[in-house]
Length: 126
Image (cartoon, rainbow, N blue to C red; front, side):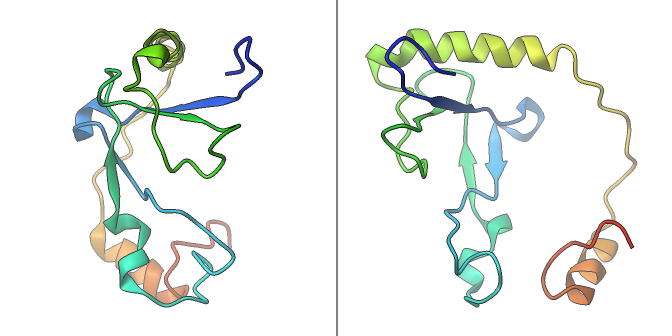
């Protein structure tokens, strides 16, 4: 969203069904995640962030000032109105989402895919 100050803002919202947790909350770089830096501590699936639906727990970023999203600004009183506006936009979009039943997760298949492709789940198309 780009309000009148010309800054770009981004809002992350975690799924209600997953306690508002967004997984894979890591900063990427030329060395990660392309496997040229081998560290289990940087495994994206090990890093989660709670991004709630209230300004005090939300994850809103000023991309103009903070392009790599290191500091959430939703808890600052001056940003509450913008947070609520952006959350309303998310909720409007969620009302139109088609989310079919995709069956149950198969951890064995995920592990096999990761092993077969050097730590990645892919390629998706063969």
